[in-house]
Length: 169
Ligand code: FEO
Image: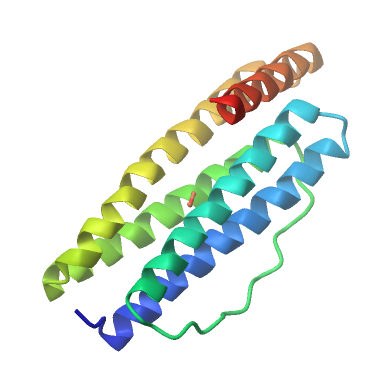
């Protein structure tokens, strides 16, 4: 079934949010790598790659539906953060914002009876739950260590190992 024009626009905006997340996390990776916190750097590189895949999934859906692609401008993500915790808090906040945008869209497609797109969106709802949990977990751990430099190095190592494990799975 052909997608209504406003739904095409909404899906394209979601694609843009995913591309922004890819860019956002790439910049966050640079924030950590430039501080020699390579574990967190690797973590955000992995997140960035995943966000790119989320964007591609939306792109493929639009192509499958025969929709012409209209690229949207991308914002430039912030580069500097006061602390690693502030960086993770920004990531967590962004994930919550993205989740809310998927909830709003899900409600809309349900009301419209666009069940094909509803089924497509459920994958993102589940993915968002995982990503929010992940970011929330790191915010929690970084809050616990406070200003402890040794604690930060331990968490950096843990983040790097977790990213490496996921990449090899
Ligand atoms: Fe794919 Fe975390 O938004």
